[in-house]
Amino acid sequence: MSRRVLNIFTPPTVPEGQGAQVIRIIGNNNLSSLNPFMMLDPAFVKLPAGFPDHPHKGFETVSYLLKGSIYHEDSKGFSGHLQPEDIQWMIAGKGVMHTEMSGSQDELTSDFQLWINLQAKFKMIEPQYQEIKKELIAEAKQNGVLVCFIAGEALGVKGPIYTITPAFFLNVKLNENSEFLQKISLKCNSIRYIHDGQGIFAGQNANQHQVVHLDINDKGEILKVKTGQQKCHLIIIAGEPINEPFVQHRPFVMNTKEEIQQAFQDYYDQKNGFEGSSFLEIKNLKSQKKVIMIEHIYYSYQKLIIHSFIIKISINFLIIIIVIFNNETYFIIIYSYFFQFVKFLQHHTIFLKLH
Image (cartoon, rainbow, N blue to C red; front, side, top):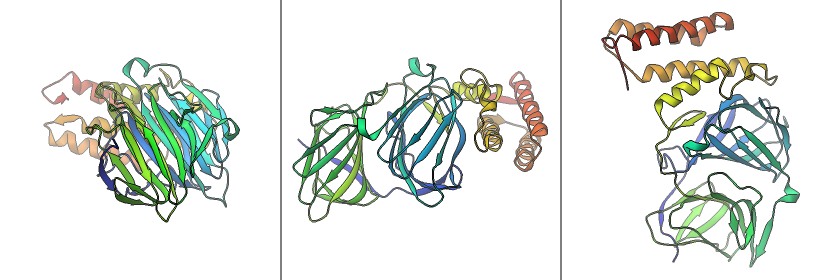
């Protein structure tokens, strides 16, 4: 039986990185989360825009390039150059700093990046990086359907990526008047994104840039898509939820608020996965590090219940000063004093209570 469609919606396009645009499929008002997936973003970028130096911790990523080229470099010494239909798999684990930049000022680069959560026992493993070239990626053709296997298995063919958190990630192209069927576990969450054309799902049409969200509570084991007079190019992801609490704040995905706070502190202190990150010779490290530090302060501020109006005003003023401060040395000094101040307040619960 085909699985029931829960919702069809058009996700928003949002700014990301440095001048880049992404379609925010997961993490919007229609679909705030899809356990175990934290994010699926089709990105559109060309130089000088891109995704300069930024940290990750606690999850794994799979990137699939459709058009253009991408250069990758990270703080663990891994580097790569993706061409169309190449795959990049990175386990952030205990922490990694990396950059991804388009290879052209003229040609628009288009890719998909999927973030997959890790179980608590895997969150502090060593980072890993693997690049799979187009020539090594299996494809299957059947009755007007072409399937490219990024991760997982379909039509009896397995993809080259075996994610730590079991998932599948398929690039599917259907000719007119074709049909694609894929069996899926009843325990899996799944969505389809229409990259181009039009697909028919349980009698409902979905058009370019729309998302089809399938109902995990339905008993259907078959993912089914048909085409009529138009072709359809879609991305399919599915994965079994991780039955653990999780907290995500921007580039970090951990299990508790305290672990998120510690991740920010580790990033600042360059430890527990971020050793040597300040020596990464790629674009805009200092400016991006400043952004992450400001986010750390703002995140800490959000988690405080402070009964003194004066303290609230003081912290707001501090954040404003840091945002406009241009001297990095003074900025880091202010940043350090702020957290000494927070630690002092933590020991005086008359002023402060942490959630």
